[in-house]
Length: 368
Ligand code: GDP
Ligand code: MN
Image 1 (cartoon, rainbow, N blue to C red):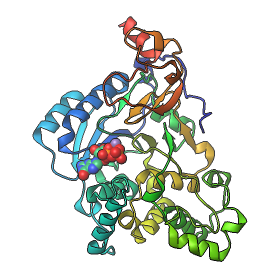
Image 2 (cartoon, rainbow, N blue to C red; image 1 turned 120 degrees about the vertical axis):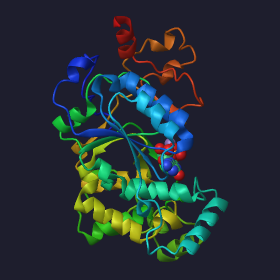
Image 3 (cartoon, rainbow, N blue to C red; image 1 turned 90 degrees about the horizontal axis):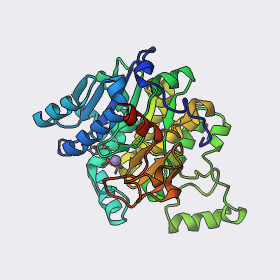
Image 4 (cartoon, helix red, strand yellow; image 1 turned 30 degrees about the vertical axis):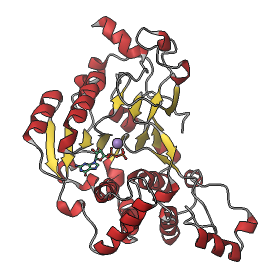
């Protein structure tokens, strides 16, 4: 999908774009009280690059009651309505059928095996929440679209059109910026469970599904004794018989997508199937691979959209649109390797200048 054309090119006048029909949409940020500064900086950035013109509401979700300071500071920062909600405790915990003692042992084992965030109970709850619950929160009931944002992320270009309206107009369902390979040790049995669900529901292997598949294992690895041995030696990320997942997934810390897709019976049935297996705790399934496998299973390729025009940074990766080829030479951008413009990749920077400026923003600055 990296060849998707942007919905709009060059700078629109965002003040005119914002008056055309609007969507029922909200920005959604899950955060902890301790992330107040990062949340505020991110929302300042989102307002500067987009929401100062569009004034969409921002829904802040937390598994704990919000601190007054967080509420006050973010209310001051957001131009649209800022809504602060707590997640129902049933959506931030183990499902009833998971034995919590066994789950804690699994997580300790994941910690020893250095599974990324595998030892952190709250992280498992967070992934389960974003996989199967956020879209059912009553505060999101009025909305059809959401844009997921996290404390600490940066948007490096102005977005001068309404991405929700563009998604709706173009019959899109799920939009992303960055695609990556998942760490196999977080999800040894995820693909097998999704594929079991697919087979049980007679969902055909579409081109979109096949795009998630790796080349088959060579025949000699598929022999039963070899498979048995490999199974004993390692938790292979996919079964050695049958299809294998290529580990490709969209990084879900950025998503602009339809809430109705997640609320659909088929997505909900898939989530329930995965949740039943206990893999959100006995392994450390991320919401990103769950969403990605789901959209490739249940949607058509043209319903996905790669926002190649959105400059985006979440440590340690970024996407840098190529609409400003001269910007590497702009004062203050010396640190930017010319190669970073129009590319995606890994950045060693921990904060501060991201060195990925889009012409759009500079032109607007000149106008104002
Ligand atoms: P990473 O991006 O995978 O490294 O994970 P993050 O630490 O960024 O967490 C993903 C999102 O979930 C962010 O929006 C965090 O603010 C949020 N989050 C993670 N853990 C918790 C938690 O225990 N409580 C709350 N309220 N939010 C959390
Ligand atoms: Mn994050």
